Length: 171
Image (tube, one colour):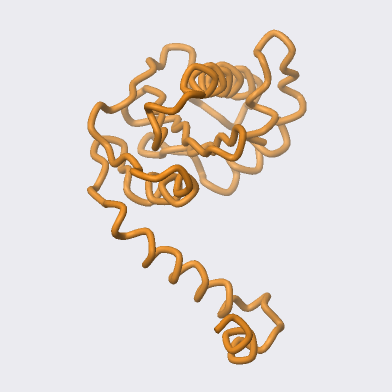
């Protein structure tokens, strides 16, 4: 859905996201304290757009604010915001008027020092943003996050491969 939401608003068709948005509303039981997270991926770079219901605003988290593609990523995240509004207006289960929401990007949130950890930062933004405060984390946490994700994948019930054998192959 996030890829579709990245389209320019003048060519975006809200119908292409209605089913997924409705499913998100049903699964999350949207309430006043909810945060809706949307990943944005452009040229292998990740950012996060948050519909912050509590604060009546959209938050944008991009781990590389000084990248050469900054202008393009800003344009795309603004497209996502505009298109979320368009889809939300069409969904009767969604009871919030996003048209009045402001765009607010916190000034102080963790930024990566590398050019290859943006996906991990996006995961950490989702886990650590409560709608008001971003819990602190740093580049030094990324190796641990990689390990946790690998273990979760190995131990996942859908993984029918022998974890011990797979780990042996990796090492």
